[in-house]
Length: 161
Ligand SMILES: Cc1cc2nc3c(=O)[nH]c(=O)nc-3n(C[C@H](O)[C@H](O)[C@H](O)COP(=O)(O)O)c2cc1C
Image 1: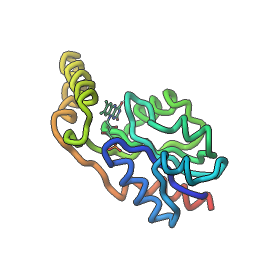
Image 2: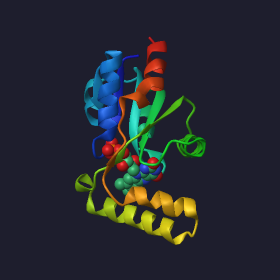
Image 3: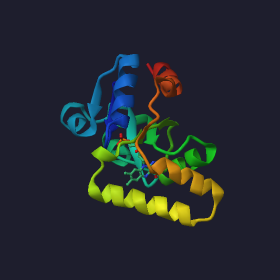
Image 4: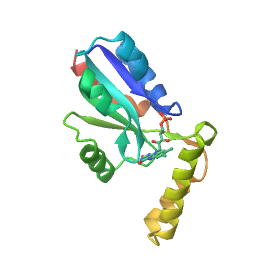
């Protein structure tokens, strides 16, 4: 294992990537920086933020490096169904680790705020009690970052040396 590479929009994926890199004593790169500094073909763990079930940057990373595992940093709670959706939407053939992030409205771009508002309003209109409850997550800043969430991906990383 050579490095941890990440793509982050508002910082949660970056924090997970940097904390994991410290635990595994590996270098950590933002994907843009990695393209300049890390040779193609190296074995890496990729951590990306989730946008409409896409793990951002993962496809790009897979074209350059040998991705051994993917970390998905999303807002919604971890669940079997959520993982299955992420595996299928991202056509994953390597282990997936879900790392719950958070939301920081002050760092979101205008369009991103609008998209989240549309998702929120759709959830409220659904008349499904689970969805109307889940919509609350999109109403204020939250931060679910926890080092404990890295336990499984760190154990995986250690097994790859
Ligand atoms: C436009 C938009 C779409 C999102 N779509 C999803 C999603 O499909 N699933 C999810 O769990 N989180 C989704 N999120 C939440 C982000 O993945 C979450 O805020 C994450 O912590 C961001 O990581 P970052 O701080 O590294 O950018 C979305 C956020 C935005 C702004």
